[in-house]
Length: 389
Length: 105
Image (cartoon, rainbow over all chains, first blue to last red; front, side, top):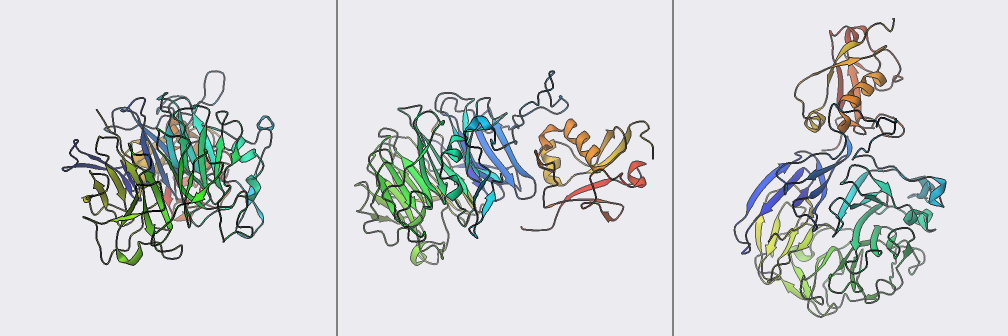
């Protein structure tokens, strides 16, 4: 499932992953920040459809992407229940400012150092529950996490994240102040990890009521105190489901690793040609095998030396090898955005990524060989994989 | 201008919103009371709930920044939403145009 600047595409193949059918564009002309299927019901897919003109739309498919509906009130039906209570509308994301949330929070740090009101802009990431098809989490800009328990019809903020105390110190990165990563711990339903640009990584151990920053060990020269509790521009965090306490992070600069659920981080950039980048992912079956795509620098958002290279470490970091077979090795100046890499769960793990140049590449053999599935889509914002039995 | 009976107002939405509401071409919507931008949008959102939040903010009810309201070759975007629409729109001679501003790509 590929989200692009101008619509969504669904690419389908059999287990060989050689021949592909391409369907789309779905939601033509809209930005599709993310699409993700429910592992509890593979036919259930959620999509974030957004536009600078028209705002946020949530779409849901219950037939594997063939047809889509907005999970709100159908046309012609009253938008209020008989008692006068408004029914849920799927595109309504309203920040919690109630007294019950403990710390109603309305501002964060703006570019000029002043405080700025929280303003909802879009959903960056949708993370369906692994057990409940109707439960899905949304990471949004301005940074917050929302949850729907009715299949995306209505959304409620888990406001303890913004309210835990550091919220007023968060500030937007160049891409906005977005909550772009949500990882649900498969072994502990009360534990959720999230990451925000530019605030850092956070964790809850009580199902989203309370949160704490988990950024110890991160070093960011672009903030006044490089080891500050928050303010780090984390680009992506990844986990292998078999080892939920081990996390890997692509920070603005630096590739990091934690072996204690984010309590402490250490750098594992090792021999990478540059440790700036956006994506990071973990092999489905080998928890020490990780993938990144190094980007030249924060000022030059394209691959280093004009060569599109995925780097793989089989040692959990520090020692990296360039994977180049089938990827352009000259005159290539694309970027790979933070949600645009995914892995499948077939025996020989497939790795997928999409570029800002509109190419989607697959490696059916864990990175040894690559081939383009499509070359000329709009700029790719996100790639997700569903492995169907 | 009296409240009178409900009026049928012609509305032209931008293509993205027509797609979202599963409609094609111009809309003809019955609007109670004095037709204004606010009462037209109230009627529009009641009939097509999926358009809530796409033209005006859910909470503040402010027009989204890159949308405009035109009618009779006039830009009504900066008028009060409670200003009665032009007579030609109320009589059905002209549509109310809701369109995306030319910005971005």
